[in-house]
Image (cartoon, rainbow, N blue to C red; front, side, top):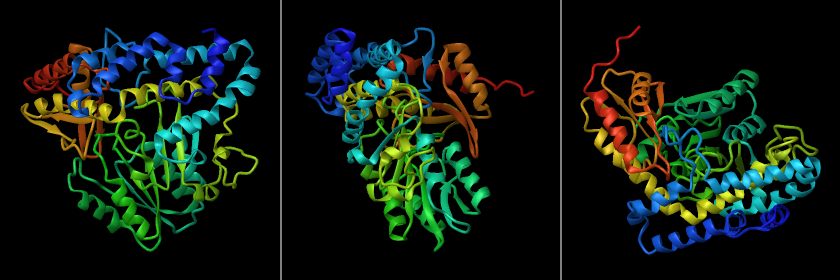
Length: 434
């Protein structure tokens, strides 16, 4: 397919394999064949099929020199998504202002519908932006709050969101009410009660992180939201880590407002995200950036970014196709299986501390582990030095461990090396402090 034909067919594509076929017909056909085979078994059985997931691994350009177990920060894109991005970028460079603003820009509505289908909402409730921080900051700074209004949030929310709320506190005199959720906490009612006890007659907003980035623990968002709504509060949900990792629709979170980063678990191009706002609430949020009608009820008022990465934005469609063909239920089952595979071994090591629940309703891919008197930074350095395993150290609040985050391309050999490295740590004295 020549480049121009690819572009126009891609902009019109809405089916689960349409854009992948436009990028690479042979690959798309093989992917479909393999998925048709794996669909004969349950997601739980499929999670242990190393032949299938080995083929999925080959769909990525995995480094042979580094074992990447920090997919929670940002995930790599399958090669077919990289190829789509490259082709769109080449079109843009033929005549940038023409192809970007008169051609590719017209594809946003098709992409918006594709995302809406994935989210289980209407297209006029979805805004395409750059990441969860941008989406959630849009809501945090755009809501009409006044001095004395209260916001309930957690000490384990994401730093960018906590800082946004602190800025509103300093600027507008709102009151922030902080709760602390023990890591892990495996009692839904107890978690809901923590939020409920913090709500007063002055509470306007409850801010929930669906999956805590520090540890991977899941928070019962819907139960908290239902409680908060009964008390007259609105609910903001940070779904940066749960979206495309777990099998759910946005309504399952109870959110009035929700944002996520598509470059995490959807494996879309870097710097892509979405913001969801219930249709009837859009008019209540001021546009963060300049818009002709900043107080309108059109979700598009939040997309006035100026010149943007059109090529990367359009390639989100290929990431959606890849995700849909793999299947969310299968993906979630595989990710949980990988987490349990290493964590169930590592927790038996001397002085190991797992900050993440192993119960399926409270976690999935991400887990955080500490060992004895070792500092997380030293564990991270040891794993990279000895096994070339890339993780991230978390020293925050009551946490002192490394966060381990596999993805669908991670194989069991990688995780065996991780357990080997953690075993060495557990049986060795920590480095002397400075």
